[in-house]
Structures are given as structure tokens and as C-alpha cells.
Image (cartoon, rainbow, N blue to C red):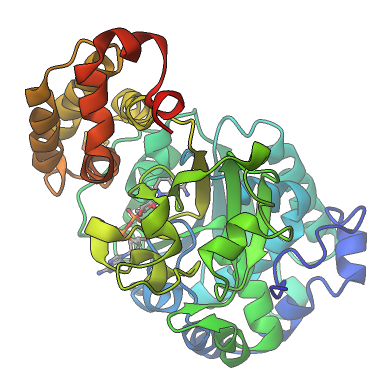
Length: 441
Ligand code: NAD
Ligand code: SF4
């Protein structure tokens, strides 16, 4: 059984309220941290090996150490709660059921980073959660864990919750900062990174909800102990939101030592595939990461079991591996049609493109139209190569990663499932009435 650090108390009734959270040892990590120096906390975070849980997996301690500290300029912590990646809903779970874990993590992190005003930027569609967070903030303030002179340390902290307007692109950290400043959420060119020039051009750390929540157990058990959980550079625990063709969709905390096979088929996690259907493919890290067929999902190209961690999932690169990403684990059974699935994602990215860069603005629309043609039985064989060319021209040629995120699913689908594209083109009448999965497995 995986060790639980974040969700260990999630089942306790009333845990979202301060009194219950405190009874379970809540805010003890913050009390401990506030007796330490910011540098000492930073060393613990570095020692933990924690990697950003939003999707990129960038080492959190390293990001914090990049924070510029010019004299007299305020710094900020911004929590990215704009969780919009299709298939990803683990931050929603944390905020809904364990809001004080996030607030406590923010208190420790803000103290370490020297931020007296920190923000939670939350996805607009999570319309019921800001009230939960604001209630938790008020409770923490009333108990002396937020506001002025926290626990007599002289440290002040205010936390504000900002609701997004429902644009996927505002989850990209610089678009988020633009939106938080009251402007249209257009991504900025990086560098400069937010750690140098972020919110209102001030040094800013932007971290995902889960990353900041993980600071609490790190302070609790120490960075060194946290680093002993997991394997290699995949330290600690990771939340996975599992969905698609599985018996038990939900949010699971894993310690990154289990195999993908165990995660899909064991009763502790996904509980297998409904109706005894065969596994066809999976997108293990949210829609932006490459889809992998079952044979490459369960085993690497060398025949080794594939594990639920950053290194193992990426083993073999984009050609045979995939990515941990945001932990949005989407399972597809034998009945699913890859062309239809890829078309749906292409429509999503086209709709969410901010339009600043030509390859993304034009390319995403073009890919969607071609995929729609193929799906509707109107495609030509050369369309497959055209699709391949377009995604190649988007990847690496845009301001923000949305372009890559739109290109990779198309590339992976063609690489691994070219036969399905060809089947749609060769069988236009069937293509319109039934999907490839049902017809061919
Ligand atoms: P990134 O690799 O550009 O950056 C990761 C983080 O490290 C950023 O905070 C960046 O500022 C920081 N960083 C990197 N190099 C730095 C440097 N030299 N100096 C200072 N800071 C530096 O990736 P990203 O754009 O933040 O994230 C992309 C990922 O987001 C994708 O892989 C995808 O999985 C994920 N994603 C998640 C969601 C979601 O809902 N959780 C939605 C869309 C995308
Ligand atoms: Fe906007 Fe797409 Fe360019 Fe990102 S890649 S800045 S979403 S046009």
C-alpha cells in the first residue's frame, strides 16, 4: 500500500474546518517552520527533491532559490489553482476537502520566500471552491496563523483568492500573472522567468496547489525523510486523478514505486477495466502528454515494467515513452477510437489558443479541420502526412507550451495508431457510422 502524506486525513469528517484539521496535527508543521530561518526551510525543500506537481516537474527548491531579492521590492507567492488540463482534477480534490493543507503550505512557503501578500488563482469553473478557501483563510486568521505578526514572529501574511474567467491558457504561469494583474491572459515570453519578473514585475514564485500542499509533510517529516519515499528523482508521493474506462475513477495518492499495471488493475486504485474489456491506450499525465498504446504503457521498449514515476513514464522519449505531466491518468479501452479522441483534443486546443503566435493560432485550427475530415470519412491518405507536417511546424515554435501540447497528441496518435487513420480513410462509409475500436478489436 502506498504511503499517504497529503490525503492521510482526507476521510475524516469535517477536516476542511480549522478545528478538526488542528486536532489532527494541522499547523504544527507551520509552527515548526516559523521557528526556522527561511534559508533553513529552503534547504529542507531542496533536500526533499520535490518536483513541481503542475506538470513540468521542475525542482521546487531550485525554483525558489532563483527568486530574485532586490532591496525594497516586494515578492509574491502565487498558487496556480487554474487546473484545466483535461483529465486532471487532483487540485480540486485537495482544495475542496483539505483547504487548510494548502493554506498551511502557503504560510510556510510565503515565510520562506518573503512574500507578505500571496494569491490563489483558481479556475473559474471551480465556482464552489473559492468560498471554501475563503472560509479557511478566515478561520486561519482568527486562530493567528494569518494576518499580522503571525505567532509573534513579526511575519505578516495576507492570502487572496482570485477567480479565473474560464480560459485554459490562464493556467500557463505568465498568462495567469497577466490575468491576475487585470489584463487579458496572454502568455509572456520567457525569460525573464517569474522568479525574476513576475506579478507587477516583482519577483514571484508560481507553484501548483499540490506542490505547495506537499511543503507541509516535508516540514513535518524533514526533506531527507521525504526524499526516501519514492524512487530516484521521483521523490515523495504524487496525486493521480484517474478517469476514462476504469472501474474506480478518482484521486489516488501513490508513492511512485508501483507499476502502471498495478495502478490500472489493482483494487486499491483503478480496479481494472469495466466489462473485462482490453486496455487499448492511456494518456497518463493530462491531455498534453503523448498517448501510449497498451504494449508500451505496461512495459518499456526494453521489456521492463513501466512504473508510475517521472523517469519510467518518459523512458524511451516521445517515440516510445510519455510523461508524468499533471497526473491526469486517462484510460482508453478497446472500443475507443483514436481518431475521434485526437480530434476532440485538437478542437479543445484550437478553442483555447490565445492566438498570439501564428503556428498555434492557425495550426491548431488546421489540425482540427483535417482530423474532423478523416473522422467523418472525407479524408485522403495525404492528409495523414499533412497532419504530421503541421504538428512538426507548431512544436517548439511558439511562445508558450500550449503549442507543443496541441502538437504532441497528434504526433503520438499518428506514430502509434497510423492504421486507424488509414482505416477511416479507406472505409469512409464505416467511418461515419461506427468507430474503429468497435469495428476492429
Ligand atoms: P516550464 O518547464 O517552462 O517551467 C516550469 C517551471 O520552472 C516554471 O515555473 C518556470 O518559471 C520555472 N523555470 C524553468 N526554468 C527556469 C529558470 N531558468 N529560471 C527560473 N525559473 C525557471 O513549464 P510550464 O510552462 O510551467 O508547464 C508546462 C506543463 O504544464 C506541461 O508539461 C503540462 O503538463 C502542464 N500543464 C498542466 C495543467 C494543469 O491543469 N495542471 C494545464 C496545462 C499544462
Ligand atoms: Fe497563445 Fe498558442 Fe502562442 Fe501559447 S502557443 S502564446 S496559446 S498562440
